[in-house]
Amino acid sequence: MNMLENGTRMQRRVFKDSPVGPLTLISEEGKLRDVQFGLELAGDSRDRASASMCPVLRQAERELAEYFEGKRRDFSLSLTWRGTSFQNRVWKVLCEIPFGSTCSYSDLARRIGSPQSARAVGVALGRNPIVILVPCHRVIGADGSLVGFGGGLEIKRKLLEHEAQYR
Image 1: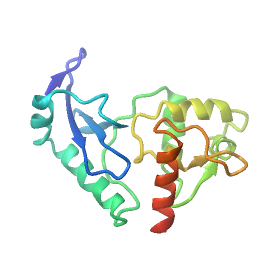
Image 2: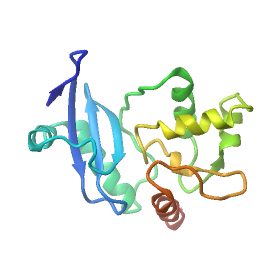
Image 3: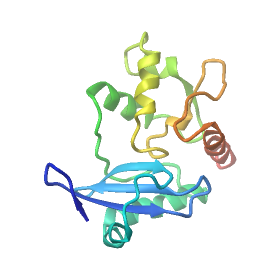
Image 4: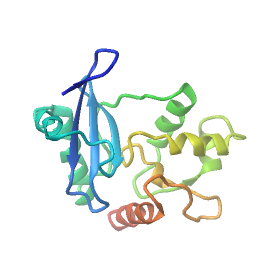
């Protein structure tokens, strides 16, 4: 377990059974704080061992496994929102896009009540710390093209194809 500068407890775990590669899961004070592609946030084995006892990380692994098996469409984890008020607004509305559906950046800007902010929405999506659960992969270009995804367009395509398969 790590302590952050503000004294809060943070735990990490790597979810290796993902068809889109390993996902690093991080909790803070019993809530899920990060789900990131790859291992760049992973700590040493002590972090992973301590995280095995963390209920929210075990639940995140279970729910992600169910999602990838096609058995889960929505997540029930408690999340820590760590962004600006604008980013948090974008991310919360993003969670309302149904499984297997997509919308454009401009559609999302309208949904948050800021129709001229499609580019700012794109920036907020690029800073999304909780990928898949906060489904930024469901946002596409106005012309239906796959654009702008931190995990890479191939992973975005895989996630959208996965959801289409189980819709």
